[in-house]
Length: 184
Image 1 (cartoon, one colour):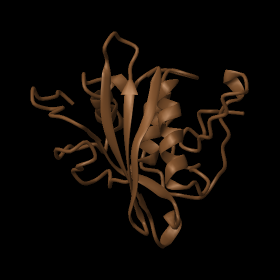
Image 2 (cartoon, rainbow, N blue to C red):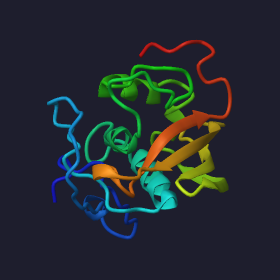
Image 3 (cartoon, rainbow, N blue to C red):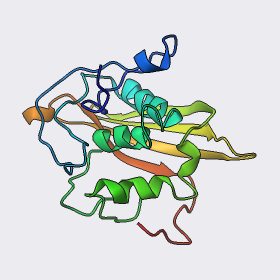
């Protein structure tokens, strides 16, 4: 199985060897990625909102497997923003159309706790509307005393080639994560 072709279509299976932990399925969707090997040509199966959050967190837990920043690639594929518009995915307006800018934010001090995290706990889940779901998650990172809380906002698309898919509208840090600024 080639992970390079389908980083968004992740299904984590902890009981299997690392090389077989991810499962993929295909759908025909537009490609907004650069020619650097990141492609949206394969996308997720119809996951529930809870499963979509769990798959993203699983990918971030094993961020550098099977290659560096693979988990961030998975997050980018679940991202529900227009790559040609400024986005509030992380709170403030950012130009996230280029994967490299998106990737850099995950390496910022408040989001890096997600990369390779050791433990997580769902604090709350709420179906805001029929097609909007929010989940707050506590994360324990790999560094001593590294704990943060994040809120996922998932939106289910209606109509078109994205019909029924749960995409991440925002991933917000509980706190002032950009008070010192961020070079993206």
